[in-house]
Length: 461
Image (cartoon, rainbow, N blue to C red):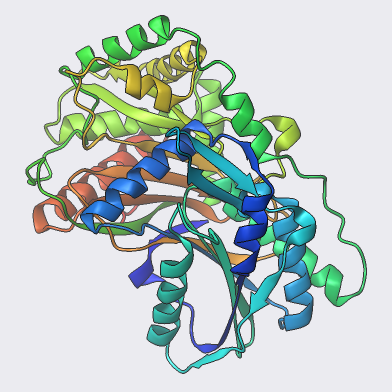
């Protein structure tokens, strides 16, 4: 899975067909009555959307694009997409704020799912394809709107490209990969007039209800742990640990870049070295990050919010936003062996995960008001090799794209894919910030490869 900015997405040209739930189905969903509450992360997203509406800084959207070698059969694909939406209840969810102020979910019954298909628009250039996708996204990625998801297919070349357009409200990274795999399998099955061999999916609505069961339970221990974290970070949740040259109050257009770190052969060697030295790949990446930051003048205390999956094993084949986060912090003083720093990073993550007994959104809301939470630094790692469709590859070139956005901080996502490990970085689009982020990424890569005996590789460009 590559993560790229929308402006950097390369898709070619051709005929673009689109599918989305009908407007009439919104009333059917509302008539079904409230199903349950949103999950904690969904409710936060909905509040952010309300604020975004007021400021004019919405929508924020995600696109998934994935290439398939087969020629798309529009009728079979419509059946496939209809079945896919019926399988996953979050894609049939509508949110409303009730008269009592509570936000409730309404779910369109699976039997009532009906998709409308466009006649198809010929887009003679890539720019026209991206413009059409952006127009589609503007109509479906408002978290308070309907529908919350749309699909598209670009045909006309040697291979076809499928698109899923949705807000983060309904999908996480795993969900995008699951969608690419399921839609491709369903399309093939309907084209061949057979049933697709897919596992029974879980319900994100049920997960959200479970997410709310302990809302009345006190958070004293968890809040105390996070407060110690903030104290170690200077009295706030950590921002990106290097000076990006942008005042914290400024919201600027963001620079995004996908940087290759190393191929899969090297990634396997890194994994083996980590296991032999009492660590893990994500812990080693955080250790290398800490050393790179220290080398560039950012200090010896590393801190970040690290996402973690909340996806229960029985609900693996389920589209939804199954993500929480924990605080990770540790020391990386000069002269400390890399393996020791890595083990500290691993222990910090394990300790925080054990003490995290509530959704991160509940914890953040419960922190003392003097703890600043702006520009928080996120450091994410995901191994996509065991995700649906990875082996053997059913789809090729899956990419997750974002629309242009504004901000003042920096964040890092590292994905290990079957063909190698890549880092996606985000920072303000200024010369100093971009230069700093490239230096940070080069240092991270160099420190990790030197530690495992694979140094002297070319730094990322």
